[in-house]
Image 1 (tube, helix red, strand yellow):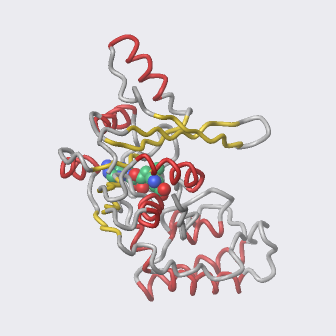
Image 2 (cartoon, protein in one colour):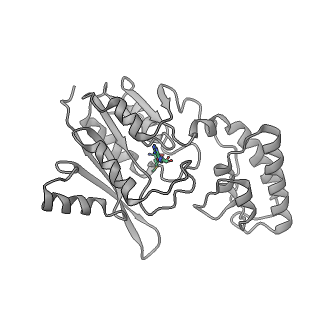
Image 3 (cartoon, rainbow, N blue to C red):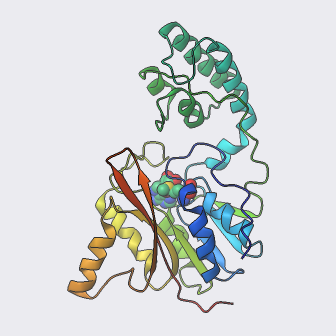
Length: 283
Ligand SMILES: C[S@@+](CC[C@H](N)C(=O)[O-])C[C@H]1O[C@@H](n2cnc3c(N)ncnc32)[C@H](O)[C@@H]1O
């Protein structure tokens, strides 16, 4: 199978995007039909949806844009304008250095002015450009309380033309979307829920993902074709194995497991995991 991936990562910062899995995900897709319906229940940045469509142009791909990521994409030109203003304010602050308070005031003022003029600021992209690596903020008010760093990119963000092309974009709670497709055997579900015990502040849903929410997602794995993403931090696989041994119920029974090791620092590593299972006959 040719790897036709155009996007190797999300066009805009997105917490939990599956860029680290794209290679394994793409090669594992060969186990599933090229003309199936792929339903990305937790679409996030849409990177998995985009990848399926690029690899299987004849597939129907439903991207559940729960966080309004498409809206962020449609404002990239605007976001670039604001980043240019911030870059000019920070001309004397070296990259990754703390932004002095007089410049911080100017940056916040510029963000507020932009918001007033356009009625919109992609605060996740902007905050990712002026906060410590990996941090995001979801409101301008929150930004004012933070220590800012110059992490503004040197050039414009590419406009991501065609990123959504051919995708069917919907916005629904995953359970509702699942119910629309659950009885169709030609469907493959992409299941990448917010990780348990991770900071999900940048997602649009206010409610924190508790163990119960996380376990409820397992319902969508019952007699369906799926790709499921997790990490060993959640211990969900261990729990399901225990359920299998004790009660003979393990949704991952017969699934193929792939993983990548991520190093947070010299001492701490964790495993990102992808499991997939097929119930339908290949076309
Ligand atoms: C781990 S991220 C998915 C990342 C995505 N696969 C990517 O590559 O960008 C989980 C996503 O689920 C979304 N989400 C949270 N609650 C949801 C719900 N009830 N229904 C659908 N999506 C939800 C989050 O907002 C977040 O976008």
